[in-house]
Length: 218
Image (tube, rainbow, N blue to C red; front, side, top):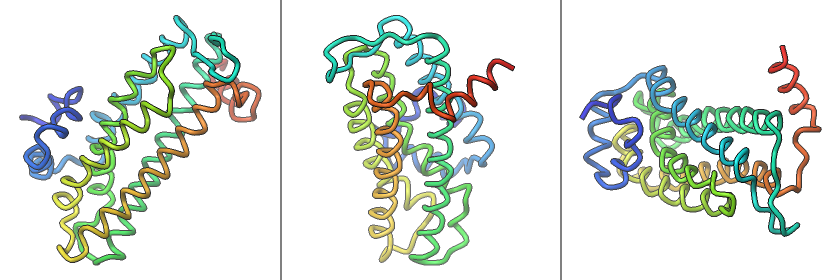
């Protein structure tokens, strides 16, 4: 199956086919630009758009205040743009850390940034897939993240050795280190965004929020 023709189903394919699906990805060796534009960007746009529609139509349940919060269009756009930028920076940083850790465990030419980026993006596809639950007004943001990151770490187990080709004696240590980085990084982003959705952070009144609104206005 061709890599680019299964974008919406790639996470499901990796869940159920595992090693076979990763072998196809490694064989096709998609470049960094191809993974970004045909894999990561569509996932980010689709999840942001659907979550934005859910916030506009149903709002979000805030357990601490025991009511549904409804968002204005400006608040939704600001939040989704900021969340997408945070996720992008997080993925770029995680990819670099995976590359660095790989070379620390055992220096090899296979520890390139492009291969690390592919491993991170394809593994986190499950987390983005579970984010399709976020438009539901009663869905707790931490639950969708927890389910998604568990699946992502599971998927990473088969993908990391096939893309980075670590020495067998260092493979499991590298996997645990990379898994820890992904959990910590994605959890930090999710905590920040969840605090906003649950009414604990007024993002629209922050410097970043004002900057995004001004950019959109121009």
